[in-house]
Structure formats: structure tokens, C-alpha cells
Image (cartoon, rainbow, N blue to C red):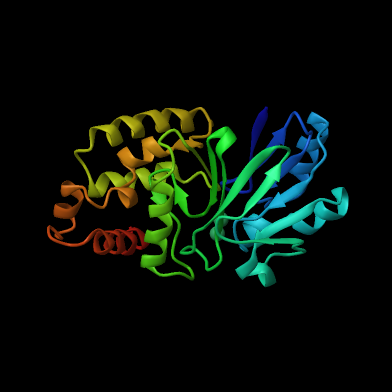
Length: 254
Ligand code: ZN
Ligand code: FE
């Protein structure tokens, strides 16, 4: 059985521990810092097998060296970004499979936020660990990649099963929701979702993971064929990529 534990750290980051009870193997996704990972491992009596890094930013790899020194775990990251992932041991690329016990994690290359960004898809748990690519009601900023690259990355996620749980690396839902509502004010599903996540946040609870089904209904970056969004942007005949590009530009200055 797979167990996933979410650790909120820093301002709004999430670190995820993935534990397979059969093999006793444990992976951590994007350890921004080491200490809370080490204490959670200790609490559960788990040994760290792997660090999985989605991309090179400090709030995703900051704990790499300390965790490796403390646990002798192996660090897995993108082949194309291996020079920027601290202490990397194993490089992976598109469609490659790594295993936790008998469970497969598939690598999905998803450049856009950075070049060389990857996601890890764990079918056994219906889970996608997508770093800073897809967020609840938002997507990552384009620091290195183009709008088209990010668009293609999100298109791959759209093909996963609807029940896929989206384990993104930040709690940005409330801020994202405000922008989403500004470009699709009559989306009833979105209005209901905002009410729900407000309550969660008031009670200091996470709004993540979300699901692919939920995002397809509320996330403007996955809804570039929405006629309301197109008309709000004054782009009634634009392609979906053009709509996406305009959304991303507007979100940057929202
Ligand atoms: Zn980042
Ligand atoms: Fe980040």
C-alpha cells in the first residue's frame, strides 16, 4: 500500500513523502528544507530511499544535500537539468519509469516554469507530483520556458485519468481563484470551489491535492476553449494556445 504524507513548509511550499508499506521504501518530492523531512521520517520510522526533484529552484532542492548526508538516499532528477540539481545521482527523461517497491512512477517532462522541469506520475496512487507546473486554479510562471512549452506540458496532464490527484508544490489556491474568477465570473463550479477553499484556509487546512477533474472544471489554464473566457479576453476566435498565452500574461500582472 502507498501512503502519501504532506508537509507544509516555508511560506507556502508542500513537501510530499511517499511510502510503500510492502517494500518499506520511501521517497520525498521536492524537499525545500531537510529538518521537517527528517523528523517526519523519524516519527513514522521510515528510511529515505529517494529524493525526487521536479526542478532546480531552491524551494524544491534546498534540502537535498543535508538529506542525502543524513540518510544515504539517492537523488533523482531530470537528465536535461542534471547540472542544476544538487548532488543528483540518477537522471531520468520522458516516459522513463522509476520504481518504489513494485510501484511505477512515470516521468513526464513538463518544461515551462523552468527548462528541464519534470513531473512524477504514480498510477498506483492516482497521483501526479507536478512541482510548479500545474496548481489548483493556476499554473507556474514562465521563468525559463515559453507559453507554448507550458501549454504542451499541461496538455499531457489533461490526458491522465480524471481521478488523478494533483500534488502541486505550493498552496496558491486562494490567490489563483481570484484571477480565475476575473476571467470566468459565471463559472458556477468555480464559485462553489472558492467558497470551499476559503473555509479550508480559514481553518488553516490545505486545499491541495486537487484532482484533474476539479481542475478541468475550474482552472482557466486548462479551460482555454471556454467561450466565456475567450469573450472576457476579447479573443473570440483565438486558438487555445493564444488564449493560454494571454491568460498567462494577464496573470503575471494581476
Ligand atoms: Zn519553482
Ligand atoms: Fe516553487
